[in-house]
Length: 442
Image (tube, rainbow, N blue to C red; front, side, top):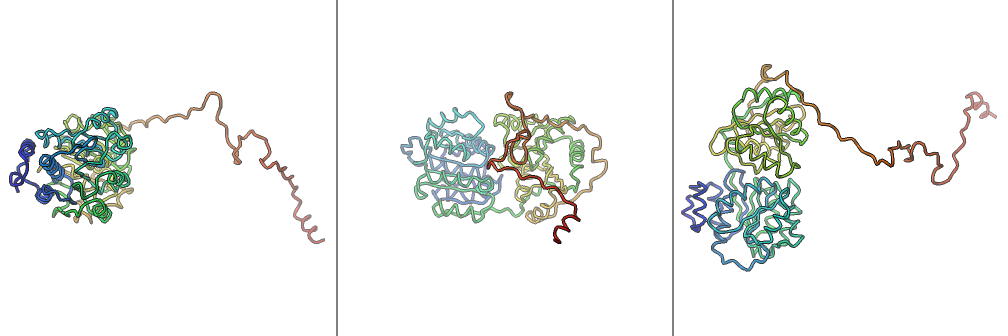
C-alpha cells in the first residue's frame, strides 16, 4: 500500500516524502485506514516495524482535518513512552514528519532543563511526548492539563508494566476526557491480558491488530553463542573485540555495576568505550549516544535501558556479555543490529550465572543458537586490569566519635543499670557436681 492511496493531507505527505518513506510497512497498512477514520487502535508490533510513523501520520492528519478547539493549557495530542531514549526518538521522527504542518511538538522527560520544559508546556504545544513521571510532575503543578486533549498514544505498553509505570499511566488517563471523546492508540510488542484489560477500560472498542513476523529474529543477524566461565568473560570479550576490529559494537549487560566495570576494563586496554545506565545524567547520556551514532565512539556498553528506543543505523555487532533474563529482551537487544536491510552479528556469552535463561530464549525464538567452541587463542590471557574505584569513607561529626554498641544498644563504656532499675542478679558459685548430688539426696 502506498501513502498516496490513503486520505492523508498534503502537508503530511510532504513530510513522509522528506523522511524517505515510499510505501506502508505491514503495521502501517493495517492500522492507518482505521486510525485515519478516527477509530481506536490496539496494535501488537515489534520495534523497528514503523509503528511510530503509523501513529504520528494518523494524528497529524486528523489534527489538520479537525477544527482546533480552545485548548487552553491542554495539548491536542499526548504520546506516552516508558523511556527517555524512546521519547527522544519519537520526537525526532515527529519533527521530520510534521515539519510542514506548523504544529508545535515538545518532548518532556527527566534529566533535562526543568524550567525550560515548564515554559514550553505553558506556551501551549499541539503535541506533547513524554515519560509518565515528568508528565505527572508538571500536571500536579497545573502547568498544563489534559481536560481537552483529543488524541492519546501509549507506546511500548508492555514495557510500561515491566517498569512499574502502570499506576502513573492510570493517573494520567483518569484526567483525560472520557474514552468516547478522544481517539486512543496503543502499541505494544506483546498484548497480554493485563495490556488488553487496560485497552478495554480506557479505550473505545479498539480495533485489535497483530503484526507477528513469521521469523521472530531477523534472518540477516548471524547469531553465535559461547559457553564460558564468569572469570573468562573479560578475556573472551577483549579477544573478540581484537578480532572484530572494524564496526560499531553494542555490548549489553544486566547490571549497572557490570557496565561500569566493563567501561573501565575496555579503557584500560585501549578500547574507546563508554557506558550508559539508567541513572547517569541525561546530558551525559545524550552526549554518549550522539558520539555512538556519529561513529566517533566505536563501543557502547549498556544495560537494558537501551534495548528499546535506541535506533542507531550501522550497528554491526551486538554482544550479550550477560544473557538477558527475559526472552523478549534477547530479541530487542539483537534487533539493534541488521537494521534497514543491513547484516549484523549477535554474540552471546552463557556463563554459570545466566545460562539458565538460554532454554527459554531458544524456545521463544523457536531455534537453537549455534554454539562455537572457546578457542585458547581467542581468550586474552594477558590484559590490563583497572584498579577498583575508591570507596567513600564514612565521615562523622567532629563533635562526636563513633562508639561501639553493646548488645543492649548502649555504648560499650556505659555502666548504667537497665531501664527498669532492677538490680542485677548475683552470680551463683558453681558447686562441685558431687556436692550438688549429696544435697539432692538429703
